[in-house]
Amino acid sequence: MGMCLPCLGGAADDVVAATPDPDTKRRQLAEAAEKRQKETTHRGVKNPEAVERKKKKQEEMEKQAMTTPVGGGGLRWQMG
Image (cartoon, rainbow, N blue to C red; front, top):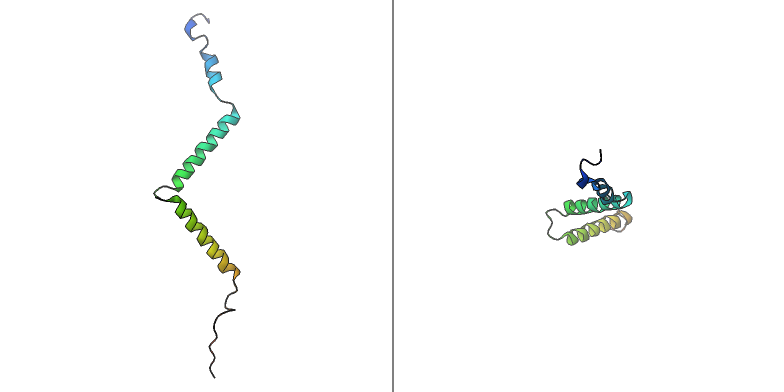
């Protein structure tokens, strides 16, 4: 029965050898997912580094505002 198509005798062996092992496949899929995520994050942004810097600065300002005491160091109006 294997003699019907002698030219395709080793085709099944080539398919098995061409598929990567699970670790390599997982790594490739992870890299592709990171690339897609990065592309969608920076979609429509001309300078993504500036956006990241601005976001970090905003977070630092919010953090500093949370740590400073509220109403303790302001001016007091005295009527006398």
